Length: 347
Image 1: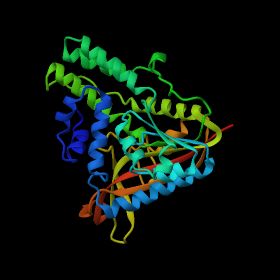
Image 2 (image 1 turned 180 degrees about the vertical axis):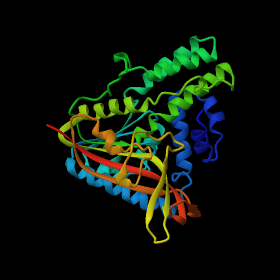
Image 3 (image 1 turned 30 degrees about the vertical axis):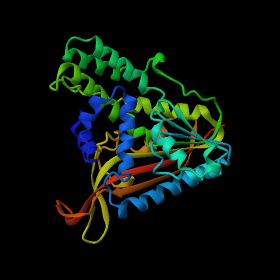
């Protein structure tokens, strides 16, 4: 398991690797994550930093929903519904569908609604990526058939690296052109880390702790293909002319506040939750650093026109003093880079 992922999970006060060994399926792992997040909805981020971010995020969701009238709304990957106002969506739209691989978190959020809105919200248990679940199932079957950990790891890496098979694609059980608004709520960055961690755990449970998915080769980043499949499904179920909102924590950054009180991003790194990895985003101050901008990712999805794009840097802890070559002594903090895109379906 990637130590960055493990570190993030364990920072929530849970021996995540031990808990994952108890799980019987990947769906149970997602349930565990949602339970942890319910006990600490800010994931350890101080309220002084998190609450302004939450207000910003809820504002973006409201603006994007405003382009879609009423009708039906779908939220993919809502988890515990902690970073958007479910009550506002239920008040705005005639019906809201919460689609998640884990039913527990969305159902708890639904039960907290006022009674007159509760009946407008339903929970649909489904793989929001429309792809990853089947790929993981094939990888699990390969681990079960293998007699060697090294061979099993190589086969699994091959499955993850291969182009998507037609049989891997699982269209969402929803009709085309049936929603006025779709919100993809942090689905894209979370497509990758938990399935990989789950497969790595399955290897260790069968072949011992010395067996790693990354042994003998790099683990392929399945999230790019899966992200494009996810966006294509969002396009299919959305009514023409209506809006898709995509929300994602795409990276972690080191931010320096220079002596003249100017902010500058001095380093971008893949987050401990897996992150997304594409290329450079100079407008955010990344000079040659690798970074996957959500604007680049959604730009690869066909059939949409951009409406607006916003970025938010969420500090994760109090700032500390650091000396950075070429800048000098600075107040430096680590931040999660969160991006929000609103797109309109053409036609």
